[in-house]
Length: 232
Ligand SMILES: O=C1O[C@H](COP(=O)(O)O)[C@@H](O)[C@H](O)[C@H]1O
Image (cartoon, rainbow, N blue to C red; front, side, top):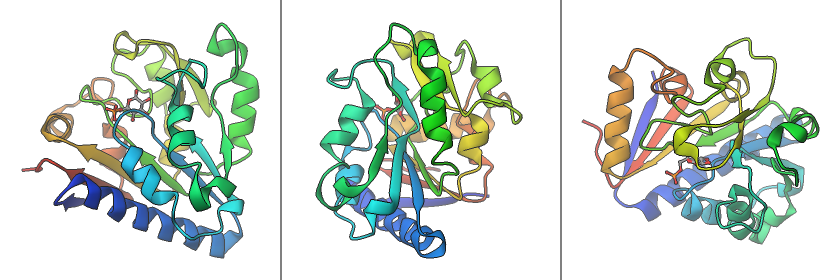
């Protein structure tokens, strides 16, 4: 069963999660001399990523990748890598290696092979932090995503897959279930009543295809970090 931590404010959440992630990265660095961190994009993680950028760890031996990317140029306001550049890739963390899930092309399929190779080179994930949409998607594993079944399969051979879905606006590239599930430590970053309610819905839902966040909910190494809402 997972662990739940509730915070009195989103700033406490950002700082508490940053401290925990930094300690877990430091442990991996001490154990094996390098570490890999996966982080989400979207609107929720900005304060957490900024807090984490100040952690005094050996960032030069840390690789950072996104859990998923919107297939737009890095200058685009919707680019998840742009968010990383503006938040985590600063202060002490600017010494980390950032693996991009985007390369200029008309379709993600054209660059999938090269990007997947770059991802494979930094696996496994030591610390995986995920966000969740109110529709219960994590990374770009969207309910009704066109390649959702393939991406959720425990024997999915690809570390990364393109994904298109009604709620997704643009095509995406997403890490797949085996890669996310193999992370040593998992964190789910949740803010607001709507998302807290979505966690309750996901728990009651039988089909993982309707609630992809279920991929995480049964994992004993998951901590759910909640602010501005209460899980009853
Ligand atoms: O599109 C995405 O959505 C989720 C949730 O984002 P939020 O704006 O509701 O915080 C995010 O975890 C994912 O990385 C992103 O690409």
